[in-house]
Amino acid sequence: MLTNTATRYGALARFFHWAIALLILTDIALGLIGENTPRTAETAAGLTTLYSVHKTIGVAVLGLAVLRILWAITQPKPVPVHPERKAETLLAEVIHWMLYGAIVIMPLSGWVMHSAETGFAPILWPFGQDLPFVPKSEDVAHMAGAVHGLSALVIYLTVALHVAGALKHAVIEKDGVLSRMSRGTDAGVEGEAHASALPPVLAAVLWIAVVAFPFVMPAPERPDGTAAPMEQAQVEQAELASDLPSWTVDQGSLTISVKQMGAPVEGSFANWSAAIAYDEATGTGEVTVTIDTTSLTLGSVTQQAMGPEFFNTETYATATFEGEISRIEGASHQAVGTLTLVGQEVPVTLAFDLTIDGDTATMSGTSTLDRRDFGMGAGYADEGTVGFAVEVATTLTAVRQ
Ligand code: HEM
Ligand code: HEM
Image 1: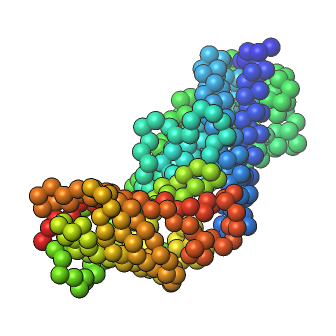
Image 2: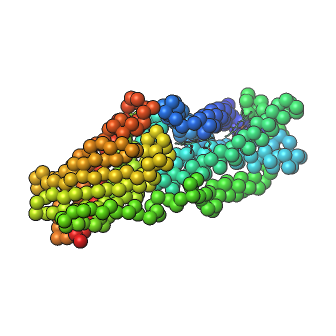
């Protein structure tokens, strides 16, 4: 029989139970393996696959959970088998409701984290990656990650108690509770009441506390004790020994894009400065850009990007570009010079458009670097995991002094 009765679970309820139990236990295992695998060049490809599978299974759980809940609403809930044991029945039912919460909160928090991040392992399906209404934001990703991690602890505890209880009934008491869920046999006496509305209310309160916890607790300080990059003092502007009119950057952005697993990952430096001298009449000038490499954010791979294999920000906290500006034609210009990054000096040409309106100059330019020129990511010898090309894009407005 598909449907439940007062004393047994129907086939559909049992299918949902075991399918979700299997998928959740698999996902917990994958999550734990992922969590305990060091992130290095050797493990990167494997980890990406692992997380892609983890996320795909999680999304499947969410879909099944919604169907399960809709189905459960239409069904009678089988009575407690030992209603006289008040505390035990209460505990078992609170845990059932906690588990119902878990099958929604766990995948949803994971998916919010995934949607707020850029890059990294995709969900293996064709229906889009990101939940609507979730902004791309480090803070949102961090919060959702905290909820995901804390909910994982709740799942460990509740599943452990739940399985221990099921085994106790099956092995010690042999009272038909497990076979009611496994084979769909009857157990319990029709007409017995459930332990009131207390279990769902308690479970809801506990879940609200768990989900709210990361929002209420102050975020821990960053390991190095520094403030978030955006709050850092601006890097000092270089001095240019030039007679040409100087320009002060008013606002701007410095972004980079690399391909990871073939998909672009965008990032930016929050803290940089540019000293610019430029003569409109001749279309010539000089520029020195100073970049605080520790202010990089690159989606979910920020830590790897700042690590010793790539930007190595602990040793090389600053990168500089010094170049000569020349006009090619109209708005089209180039800056030809040297980029000093991770201790390597490499000739670089930045092509950009420059328009001047009164005392305000607007420029936007791009340049494609090859990470191998800087010895970056030597452990990633091909483009399978991290592409060679790094697209750099700058936009700024500057004011004539
Ligand atoms: C059945 C649902 C799920 C379960 C039981 C689950 C469980 C876990 C566990 C146990 C971990 C490692 C522990 C931790 O990070 O503290 C983890 C990590 C992670 N999960 Fe899930 N997960 C689920 C669904 C999802 C979904 C749907 C996504 C994304 C679409 C996702 C994304 C992630 C990510 C990105 C991590 C790594 C977090 C980090 O290292 O900061 N999970 N998950
Ligand atoms: C191998 C591990 C598991 C075993 C042996 C097991 C066993 C059982 C049994 C025997 C019941 C019936 C209890 C009763 O009749 O009163 C039950 C119910 C339930 N189990 Fe599990 N379970 C397992 C894993 C899980 C997991 C991982 C979840 C997480 C979602 C879960 C969620 C539930 C829920 C929500 C119920 C309430 C019944 C319903 O309304 O569907 N179980 N389980």
